[in-house]
Length: 229
Image (cartoon, rainbow, N blue to C red; front, side):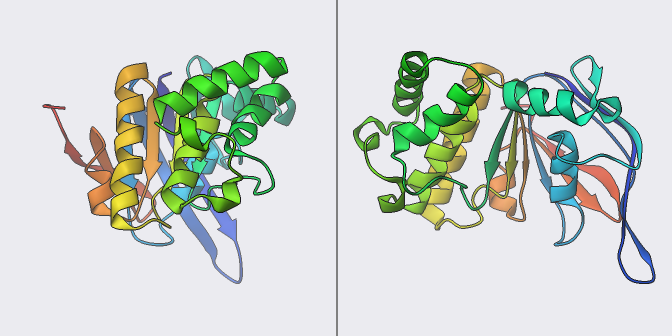
């Protein structure tokens, strides 16, 4: 899925002065590219991701996901787009601790209309993809941070999204788990040509991406592009 932003503005009104988080952001991400967005705390990285994920509306501007300007769509349609076309990975995993690894992966698929059998089959394939077949029946509360994040990635892939959004996916992980999770994201991006946009404060995490952007003072600028990837 190609992503295109044109003149995107987002202002939060808190206190006396409005906080202009995004100030005319323009961005094109070709289908299948892995992009990392870095920047100081409070720069608006998560806001950018929420706009891309149809979790919030811009004040002005266009946000094209494929051929749709989702900034113009109503919430009902945006909810369907989120469920069927976008996968989310968060810093705090957002798994259901009372469910097993397999059950956490199957739940969103069943909400999207897959039968239980179809969802379990696809979940087992995803567990093989992330090399966690042996942990499929473990409660996620018993897993390590790195394992939880890999399950969260598998869950995000369950509905075969065209866009994967990752918000500080390694923020709660140690260095070993960080590398493991980033290698999974990189491998999935390459094997599935899945458009992937990750925001992170960690330059080492950003180095795993094909293209690196910096968000500061409401604007995006290119930091680097790996032509040898």
